[in-house]
Length: 83
Image 1 (cartoon, rainbow, N blue to C red):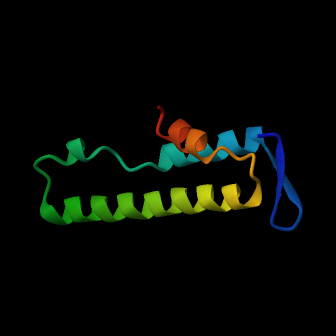
Image 2 (image 1 turned 90 degrees about the horizontal axis):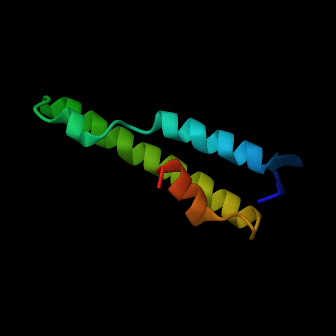
Image 3 (image 1 turned 60 degrees about the vertical axis):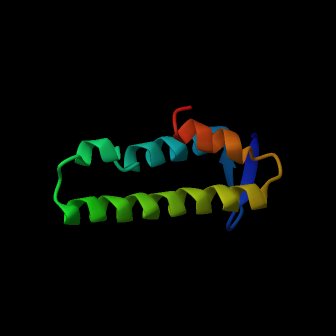
């Protein structure tokens, strides 16, 4: 990924994509294992946050891929997942 124009001519570079991926990592909901024994409403909130986070992550990846054929969606998602 070199540079890609998005929106009103804003150019995003690899550095920007990494920074965004790092921000998404920080926003990633905690592992469900942490919720073992938690009240059901807390578990439901966690599930909702996880679904919302995944939809946001996937929407961003889809958008970037639609804007630039060089955008490596699979690599970007794996980077966020720390794979």
